[in-house]
Image (cartoon, rainbow, N blue to C red; front, side):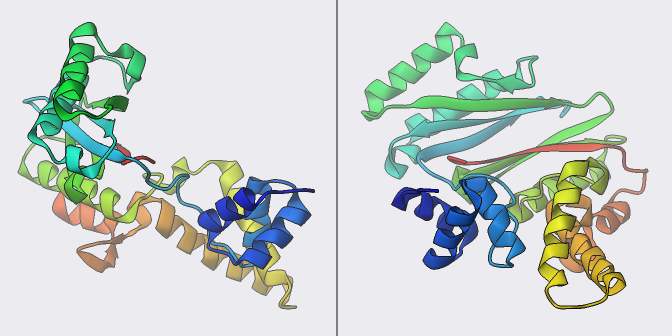
Length: 275
């Protein structure tokens, strides 16, 4: 199959593999995603945690209701980091986040912006001299629990998280700690149960393919695969991750120590600028 220089660059960016390995993968597989899997089976590439590298400029912002029962996270884009740091742009992002938090829908697309918010964006464009766009937004609500947020890297990344339980200092501390964990460690799921069966099967197949070339007995192969799956879960599942403040504990173990009221379900949204 034919491929372009841009295909090679895209594959290298996704996998970290060398140029020759990427060429071989594209020739053998017939497409970017298939080439990623090909390289992983060869042991050249690591699992992707989330698609997309950060591009563009702007800010991720959040807003919470006074009772912490709901909140929203948004991304607003501009052209340069200089404008993203201006008071005008920061005020606009805060205003849009506050609007988003007052909405009922969980997903907030650009075409949902009311006329007054569109006017605010146009006014900001006139002041800073750059194009500004509301890129995306999302909202969480907790009937039995609280919503917390954490903005990281000066607005380049943000997390909105919902944690079920009895509101109080312990639950609020836990929610904050979990939001910081999500920002730092980039999980995809909260628990192992949330990982789709097809993703589990795909990972197992890839690990088996990696190990079988060693000539080890099948039983040994399966034990090695089980160990690799444990590591996989510890990377993509929040509760299985090493707690950033005490890596000897999992997040689940730390959560039980912080909040002793019996933790309910959790849900999070993580935005990275341009992702």
